[in-house]
Amino acid sequence: MKLNTQFDTGGYLSRFASKGRIRLEGAVADDDARAIHHALEQQTPWELQLVTSKGPEVINRRELAALPEADIQARLTEAAERAQSGLSYLRLGYGLMSAPGDLALKPLADLIKSVAFAEFCGQLTGLTDLDLISLEAVCYRPGDFFTRHTDTAARLCFEWGFTDGWRSDWGGQMLFHSPSGDIEGGIMPRLNDLALFAGDQPRSVASVAPYAAGPRFSITGRFI
Image 1 (tube, helix red, strand yellow):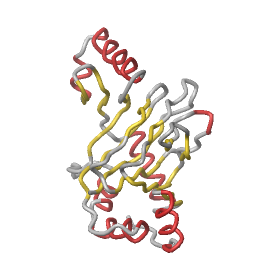
Image 2: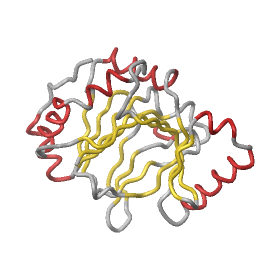
Image 3: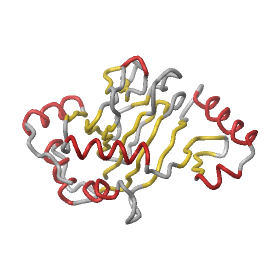
């Protein structure tokens, strides 16, 4: 799997300097992007990620299957209630920093963990000596969300979208917030779009509509 490096570096540098975020279309070949979409849709051992009164929780498939339905519903309710007043999220995820050798997403994970990818991101943002500290696959289903948050510990974050055939009224956009709470911009889920943004930018993921025809897939990561 190869990275498409044929981008207007100067233009992206200027946009990142002024807005703190950029979006690239077609960061890998179309066939590779569709293979990644298929791997996310059919071959990823998703875990449930949410925030409850005990803080962030990750529940794998085996643990989820053993939980009584009432316990699961209580956790979902807690996540929704916390969203009314502060940081909360509800989604599926799977960590890729130590991707198993047989995982279908490993070629992409290896590409992102390479020095070449960090240098590529640095060339487009003007940031140097980027060090990847987290990498995961993410899936938002109807009703899933991530409330407004920042990540001041990260110099640069990214979200690489692998969602095909999305409609804007299905929600799921990454929204960037001004200090006053207005929406300064948003990125709709798309296939093979790579968004790079400063970690200290306030942002959220809009709740996916209950009538969305499928889930929203992406690969996310953080650099320091």
